[in-house]
Image (cartoon, rainbow over all chains, first blue to last red; front, top):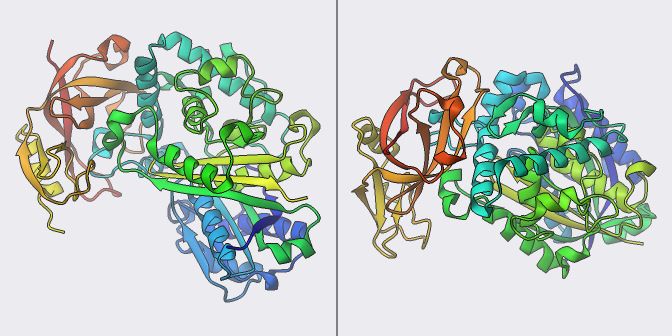
Length: 392
Length: 136
């Protein structure tokens, strides 16, 4: 396999409902990525785009074909990926595999979504489509419901009083808001205290409003290139060190293992093994914090902390810049926002800019050399892990 | 792959408060809800069996926000139940006070009855779902 690098990264501001179409949003992110990589659209040989809900957001299926035409990468293969919230990470992993294996030299991979534009009731309905439609949605399952079940399961399994877990979950949100405050592309930029989290209304017990990420509109894109191209085009190529992906069935079928998510642990192991690295080697990680409990479960599943202990790690600052591993310096899904089809690409965008030392000083991880992304689709149905490292 | 227990057959039985699952001929594990291959060993040597419907609550949540079209059902409580025969199942807890449930409900014994979701424009028709009755 050839070495493969990210040589360009672009992201729109993440936001509430806004007027740009899916195509226009992706074009904005792709333009920024292409300018960053010093390439033109005609240099791009394929497009891989995560988009889960274009059909519902604006009646647009098959968005990548229209995007390819719109941005000037005429007639190239343009594939849509749907792995719910992990869609863009799937697109990036496949882009890596195809470039690594010599099929293409330069591709654009990313994602786009207009999740805020759906409005909360329809967004809640469509996100619930990422649970099992026949055996779990009829009872009234929702996406917050999935993580609420995991939160209570977590407290029961590790013997943690629910009040203690809620305090830990609140700290996860508080830290994310603190970091997102300094991210100009973040959707929610405000200071939130533990008390604010604990007095917000309950969405699905024990999950409260400030435990949840927002529905967002936005896009992110990466230019991914083979090593020989990367060496010519970029002074700071960020190389893929390891990738992994795994899947699971419905939440109930994962029952005996919960609150741990086996697909994540398998996916992360693939990535660590390919990279020849361990969790202790990761300087900065953008992980999937769709809900505060999701961060705690993810940080344990990726091997940063032992099962049942990540919440305490957050309270001690071990999951922040200067701690054991800097988690979500972008503000995470919680503050930065969650345009689901774009989320994985925005995580890679952040890691690339962190490794290059390009983010705002208040949230820059000093001397970050190795970064990781963790993206979860639905109720753990799709999991993708990517490890990236400095190439200079 | 021969479908040994279809959604339609499972659904019809649940509407009679009979919980159907599958028994794996290779590893003897019990599976529920239905699937095409054993989740433990991958075998497709599966035979339909009727389960007891008894289990214990492994986790729960009470929802105060619902998907489009289902607001009138709020608040309602969902449970992850560990069935006596091994598999886990998600359904609703049959209680008049879903907003009063707390952690003490975890570990409680339940039996399985059913309720029916009428379907919406995104569903493939109506569907029965497990309604767990607290046994104690």
